[in-house]
Length: 289
Image 1 (cartoon, rainbow, N blue to C red):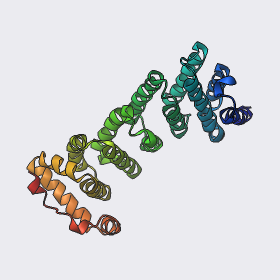
Image 2: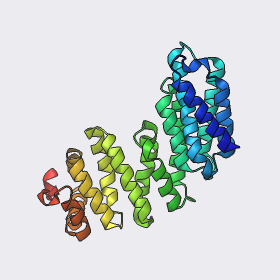
Image 3: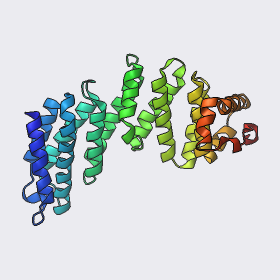
Image 4: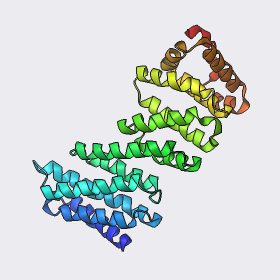
C-alpha cells in the first residue's frame, strides 16, 4: 500500500508540476499534503519505503512551493497541512532510531530547499531536530556506531546554522573525549569539523580552531590527528596561524611535535605528496607567538 501510494503520488504530482497551461494551484491542494504525512507516519521506518518516500515528499513540497509562487497568501487548510507534514518529519527525525537518519536528512533537505516561502515553519523544524541530534550524540547510552551513523547522515545539513551551532558543539565535545572512541567516529568528527571550518569566515574559523587544536592532543589516533593538523594548516592557513598564536607555549610545542610526526609518517606523507606538497610547509609554530 505504501509503495503504491508513493509511486502514484510521485507520478501524479510530477504531471501537475509539468503542466504547461495550468499552474500547480489548479489541481494541487492540502489533501495531497495530508496524504503524504499519513504515509510517512505509517511507512517511514521501513527501509524499502525510502527509495520512493524521499521523491514523494520532495515532489509534494515542490508543489507547495509552486502554490506559494502563484498566490499572494497560503490558504489556511494548506498551511495547516504543511505544518502537520513538517511536524511529522521532525517527529521521525527526533524519535526512535527506527527511522534511518539518512532518510530523515533527505526529508529535511527537501524542506529546506523548497519551503523558502515558509521560514518560520522550516526554522522550527530545524531548531527541534538539531537540538535532538546534538543531545543524541552526547548521550551516555549512545554507541560510537550510532554516533558515526548520525554524523554521516547529517553531513548535508552541517552548514545550516542550527546544526553548525548545536551539532558542531557536540562534535567538539566528542573530540574532547576522543581518547576512547572508535576510529570510525573520529573519522566522522574530522569530516564534520572540515565542513564547519570551510563554511566559516576566517575570524570564526580561528575561534573554532582555538578550541579544537588543544583537544587534538587527546586523540590517540595519530593518523587522524596528523590529517587534521595538516589539513587545517593547509586549507585554513590564516585561521590556523591566528589560533596557534593564541595558544600557550606548551600546547604550541606539542602540536608542532604532532605535526612533524605526521609528516614523517609514511601513509600521511604519501597522501600529502599527491595533494598538498607538505614538504614546503614551515613547521616552526613558535613564530606564531
